[in-house]
Amino acid sequence: MSISKIQPGMSFSRNFKVRPEWAADRMGSGHVPVLSTAALVLAMENTASSSILPYLEEGTTSVGSRVEIVHLYPTPVGEFFTIDLVVAKVDRSRIDFTLTARDEHRVISTGFHRRHVVDTAKFLEKVIIGDPGSGNSATELPVVETAPAPDEEVLSRRRDLDSEDFNDNDTIF
Image (cartoon, rainbow, N blue to C red; front, side, top):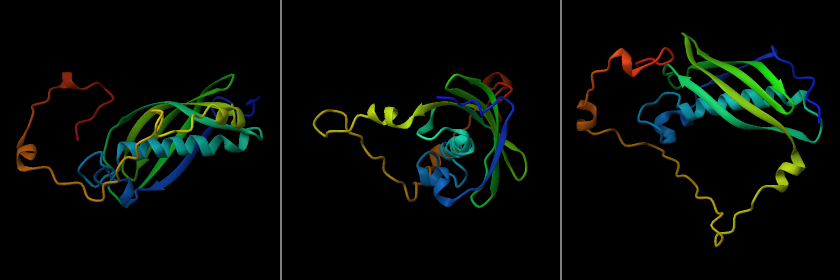
């Protein structure tokens, strides 16, 4: 299986609009109507996967195996953001990307993503089909239509943060 058409330095970009269902308060990962980190990771993986697909041999696909991001700033529902990625390294079937996400005002996230190119049929042979009695079944996560607002006690809690609590890649909102 050759992925020689994918070379370090290749760059790709994709634009997205923050949908209401991608908001932290709708995904259940927070209580505010801004782009959730989970949706941001999905957009990053989607950009990487769809960008390299035309370069893959027939019968192969790519699967994500690692994501590391720093989510720096919130992006409100309805605003546009762009994922820019660069192929940093190609090693046999492994492709490493560096990622940057920008909204209409600033860089909102930076990160790293790794994908592996696999033979689709062989990969699917390894999938274990869940049997409710075997312990291999999945539990579907509930979709949160409207997350409850935090109570007054939570809203009133404050913590003094100093620079030792953050590194150069973190931002206090």
